[in-house]
Length: 216
Image (cartoon, rainbow, N blue to C red; front, side):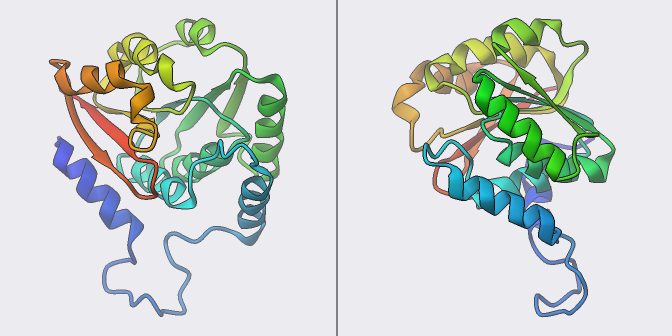
């Protein structure tokens, strides 16, 4: 049974070089991203004038966390153009899991679906356009991991809606908890005081990600 500390340790280990392998090794590293997918990711970042995508550091962290926790059912709220969905999809290719990602803006949802298809991850990642508050109740089952990156004042509402459906031992992640913390005070208070929650904040990039573990 994995503890919350183990989740953090696994993520750190998964982002580094393989045990016994020098960073200068000519062998393909475990974190290798195929050139075609690297190009798609770079194109998304270059076109991201509104800075909606997570940083590359955050993306790599999400991939490692999904893989190291062996997540099978993942929910993303706020797909934007599919950047974070591609990183998590790469992690889910390791676990055999699936991601549902919901994007409110129709044009961005189409971009996300096209980018995910181009990355060869359409069999793993499903993009749903529309209002996440309407779509989430229609999804069946629980979630091993949730990644929230939507409109910041709605974070508390999403937490109240989704956290009860996180698998005991699973994780609820939220983005921008450092650089936009003034927009989500009620959410930050909730994840620190909820009786079933253990929360830590990490910052692979500069925006900050809250990691809330649901106690068993």
